[in-house]
Amino acid sequence: MPAAVRDALPSLLPHPLPNRASGDAEFPAQFAWGHGAWHRADANPNGRDHAPTDRKPRLTDCLRGGTFRPRRQQQTPAEPVTVWTRGEVLTRPSPVPAEPGVYAWYFDEPPPGVPLQGCHTTSDGVLLYVGISPKAPSQNGVRPSRQSIRNRIRYHYRGNAAGSTLRLTLGSLLADEIGIALRRVGSGRRLTFADGEATLSEWMGRHARVCWVTTPTPWLLETQLIESLILPLNLDQNARSPFRQDLSFRRAEQRARARALPVLPR
Image 1: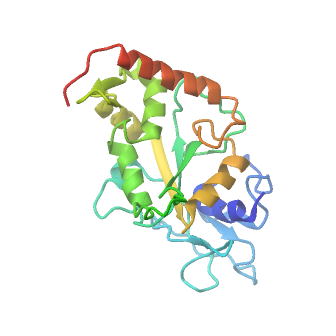
Image 2: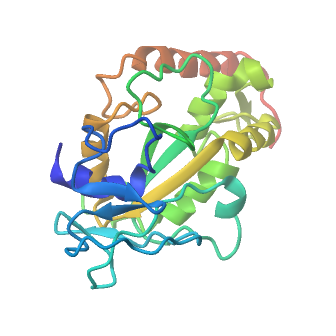
């Protein structure tokens, strides 16, 4: 497992279920679960327990030089990991930092048909998708995006399928179950779930949770995570996924149906 992935696990992979061993490949031995938090095994050389905490952290831990270190330059354990709900993410001030990073999506009720074998599973749900903000800078000299994970995560929770590949994927898989359909809107070039976007947002509010880690080069960590974990809802860079073909078909099917129907007003 690449070092960058190993070091990011405490912030992206919440604690395992009680029957999961901390020595599994997904849970490196140098991290141990205790008192509701992941700890580095070398953070407390005296081996004394750390006091538990009942507050929700702001997870400002980041990757620096390939090693996991809290921003406070002290020998303290990593802050507890939590997954956040739609309501919490959309509050102001938002708990999501306005910084570049990687985010991970957990679902306590996965969309129908998604294979879960081998996926990382916790008491909060199953990890199905990771994303980043901003994207990797282009090679043509265009100014890099200033978008942050705060913008992106909030948009996934309340935006539309034209601007969120996660919403397009979820809506395509849930269309029959929650009664929505992709449609052309406005000029006809944009594809969204129209009034069904609100229904999709409600579903995500009930079943989708998110956590994140900040890093100045999220595209590098994303690539390593996709190579190291089973993430059935990721399409880009995920050619090895056995669900890739089925998911691509479901999305293409929704697009084809939308193009056969009249254009809706905005």
